[in-house]
Structures are given as structure tokens and as C-alpha cells.
Length: 110
Image (tube, rainbow, N blue to C red):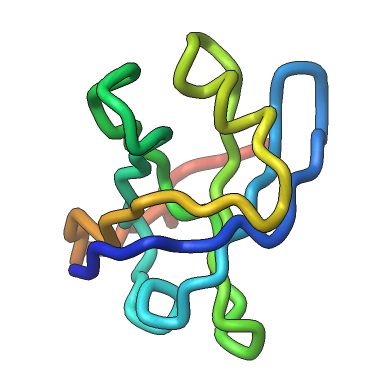
């Protein structure tokens, strides 16, 4: 687990209220496993106080970055959605551990 200031490198609106954010952080990009998440502190101020948890959507080890998909539902996520590339955020991660597999052989998805 790492905790550090991390730069936003990309912000793309993919649907109304949904944003794909990419952060430059080689430590998280290389250590992240499926099912893990990060905690993002939106500001260095007291408001909003709590970090926001987001699942890691993907990593790009060559670019030393990782992506999260957010939906704007409140003040904290709205502030993240409005951030411009170059903004820095205090991020903790990767967090969580899921070491299992899922057997879907008996299910039909037609």
C-alpha cells in the first residue's frame, strides 16, 4: 500500500455524470491486482474531510498509470470530475485483497 501525492493525467467524460480519470503513479500501477481499489482525498482542506474509495478500473504499466471510473453523486465526486489534468491528489492504494476465482461453467449467458 502506498500513500502519496499523485498527478491527474487525463480526465474524460464518457457519459453524462461519468468520468474516466487517469493518475500517474508507478507504484500503484505495478502493484494493483484485480478487485483492488484506491482512496482519494479530494482536497487538502477539511471539507470534504473523508477520502473517497474507487475501484481500480485498469492499469497501464508502460505509462505507469492507473484509471478509475467515477460517477458524480455528491460534492466530493463533483470536485474530482471538475479537476483538470495536472491537479494533484493524495491517494492511498492499492487496497483490498481478493484472491479467489469464480467458476461460471454451469451458467448460461444467452
